[in-house]
Length: 208
Image 1 (cartoon, helix red, strand yellow):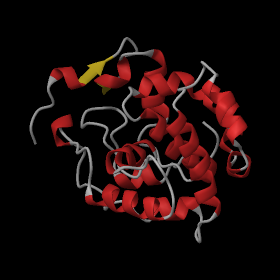
Image 2 (cartoon, rainbow, N blue to C red; image 1 turned 90 degrees about the vertical axis):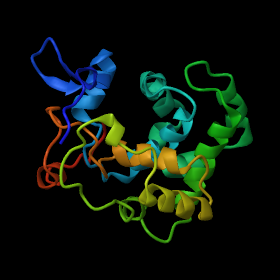
Image 3 (cartoon, rainbow, N blue to C red; image 1 turned 180 degrees about the horizontal axis):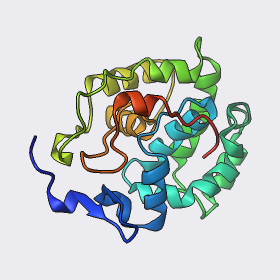
Image 4 (spheres, one colour; image 1 turned 180 degrees about the vertical axis):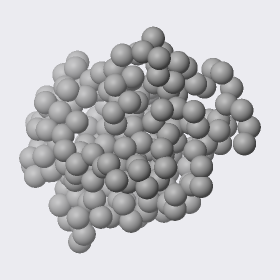
């Protein structure tokens, strides 16, 4: 295994070595340390991730993360039933809300994705996790080893699009897999890089 370039791992003032991106901002650190790469099975939180990864397209994730409380406010905590019931008047109202990303297509996609979720013939968590890839034998040594898309994320994207979901391209779906712990892309040497058995034994099931 190749040596991780120093810039890709950072030892923080707390003495903990983590992926460098997780040390650049306090909110990023919390997200890296507590959420990213940890298996999430809660259907509400997974629906939220589908929507927020769509909002992130073309933007940095920290932009979305800092606005997540506002997104949760305007989208009713990502309660699928309530989001599915939102109307064009709600879309117009959100387009005027500077706390979130004011992109008509992405706002409409969140509402459509709620309606598509209600139309599923299987629970959302089961559907998404059915695309989880086999576990890696080891953690990636460098971000050069981390793909932007995989056959699994491409298959997930294709299936969700067929079911009426929007803003669910293969790259976005791979980001979802990372965020929801379907893959663990913490680098070797990061304190969060764990064995698959340990990772799957400690899923996030509640509200984060």
